[in-house]
Length: 345
Image (cartoon, rainbow, N blue to C red; front, side, top):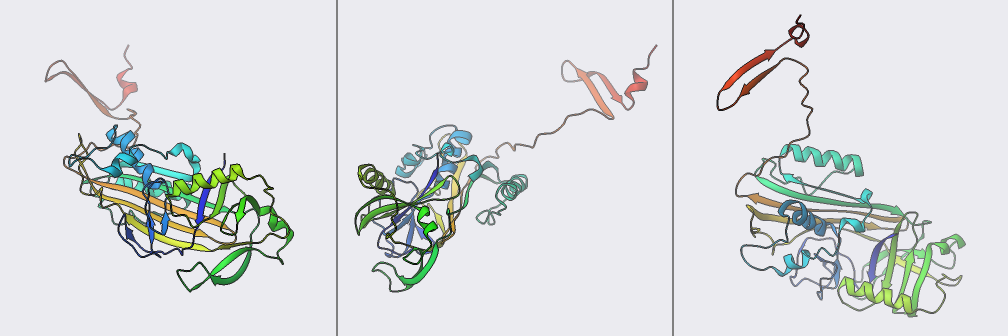
């Protein structure tokens, strides 16, 4: 099944700044949603599943139970505990996760894995204390794919009504070559303010664009789009006289979830110190690039056992052996030459 990248094209402009969740922000500022279903009235909002992946790892592989805090109930934790997004919804080649005591061994393990799998380095892990005093749960999601054919670059124009700055567009106009029309599938067209298309790619990833002024949760907007697509009775072909115009989108963000920070997880010695998520997204006429990281950095009240790397316990050279029944050996042997030792008559 193809993976879906959903873009909701409402009347706003993207911004590349850091922000705090659920705070009142300017209309043009971007706000990260911790879940696909999160409801806010923010104009610019984005969600990516990396933070849910680290939360799932914390639940399933570290705490081995739903996350609850000694300080009391947390609505956000309860929602994340539902695990509405999981690794199974992604191809294994597009994500990486790790967890363990934040020491130099783990740092080297993560850096090596990211370079081998994605040819990438982590940005959000640069400021972590790797002395072994913290526990880390980490994830990266990486996508890089091309449209079936590169679209034409169109002239710069204004976007919406919130900003007078002209932005770069790509798409199809009357002078575009015919092959570009194979890039686009019409999902539905109800009127000039209510329509959706799919931009076809060379891989399994799908790009769905939905034009609407509705300001619901991202999940509700997606559900509306799919319902309208199912109800659409006309052709899904992008016609010879149809036109397409899509803005270039290019932003970076670094987000924290302060409502989780400083909370101690029940039945553990772990207190969440930082809950971080970064997003680096770019869509132009050739395709889409997405890199997102997430990390939970937790202070340990008591040291957790350090998990070592696998080792070969091969006694192929000098060794000592001791036999004991109580606290003191009753037999001891040091062997430097097994062949000579075993060469008895």
